[in-house]
Image 1 (cartoon, rainbow over the protein chains, first blue to last red):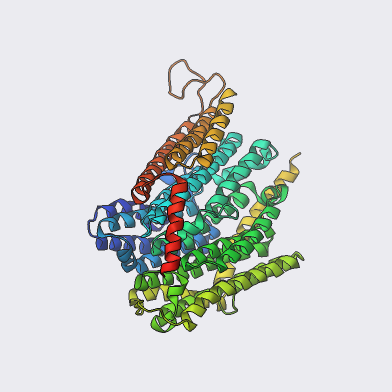
Image 2: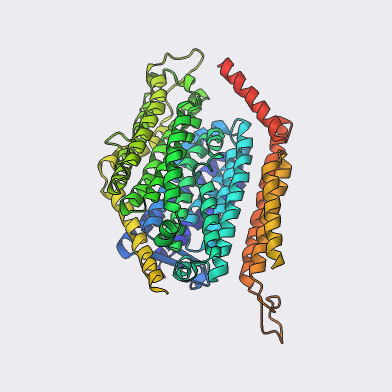
Length: 503
Length: 120
């Protein structure tokens, strides 16, 4: 076995081992350096993994040499590699950005613990994306969730504590639902390996146990991915968490939950059962629309910009849910693409907001007045990422919304297309409020502001430039998304055919 | 079969406590019940008719399925960790707000919001 054969396990193992080490350091800076090295190493490995997947097909790794279905299998296909790339890239960038931001958010004694929790959260998210074992998903989900409760509670404001507690209650209920769902699947099939499950499920899929398991799993993941109306934990959690945590979680946590949902829907239950036999596609379209309209509307009236962006995240999840609900090649590809684009724009926005909070100590909209002149690079980043959020042509946000609208028109659902555009209009209003305050407002007295330090600006601008780059060159991102979905769909079709052959 | 009913009862009771109680510590207790019910569910499904405990013994032919037991070991660890994190958050909330009642916390937060609105 060569070294590269161990890549799938290394992505998870490096941050997992670095986490306890980081907590041993007394100096926050040393812990930061270790965490930074671990996340960048994971990022490099995930790049190599994706390249390997694209050239040689799905990479499988048997934990401890035990063959599935007995052992735990790690499995990286195009979709998994793509999401893994997003998670590791955002983690590496956020940590590069985060040192000074964390320094101002946390006292010295807590910083090494913070980096340890951050690495654990990252471990959990990376593990969820590449594991091929249903129960393993639950374990990694809890690793990432438990550490994210701790991360959120470290916010400056005491309301962070309450937000973390609410998230803990909702998140644990969601995770327990997922556990029950996996239990029902195991009860009927006697296996936990995802591929094995997919093969055995069609034979028993016409039972109430499987239907109940399906319901538990979708509600559980719905809670984790903040699908309307299960999103109530999200706005406060993102608004009061330390800036770096908001940026990291907003860009990755809900994305990985969506990915896991897709994995279960298409990879295990199969396209025909999940979006055909069960009316889940209609539910997703309905909830997605409700999320887009209601969350965007609420976002318009927020006074705290972080909270505004958090509500906007709920709306963006709505777009993705809608794309999945369309249940077509275009719709699903648009959903996967939006997952990637949203990670880029929300990562950039929350990091830029973190830079502002670092300089002026607030993220309320009235305190942003006049910052356009005083922090030109930071505000320009917010402006460009905001335009991407709205979906202005030339930015990444435009591409995914374009394909989403195409997906709805393909099926003749033009009222849906109109509502998607109306959602973009609402985004225009709330992004416009930020920009209006920053560029046309008169600076308030007593607020000192200078341009953010260069160490913060570089990671922010990497994401901003990525937003523009992927808005103009869609081959890589849309091509990958399309391939990822095409990989999932024929497998799904095959199981549908098999189910039809069965008497 | 009765253990499935027991699991359902515990699950619903725990769920009800989580939703209905305003006291954060009681919510954690409810969450604990809710999670425990799942352990019973899993262990019940691993039972094989007439099977003995899955420990290799002479003269025993039929064993219960050990996999659910092992899975639940992990889930118990997760449950304990969740309770620990939840309780420590409750302690921190008590230090910060002087209360673990949801209504009091809400009231204090609303006051803070008003001060921020008028002050800044």
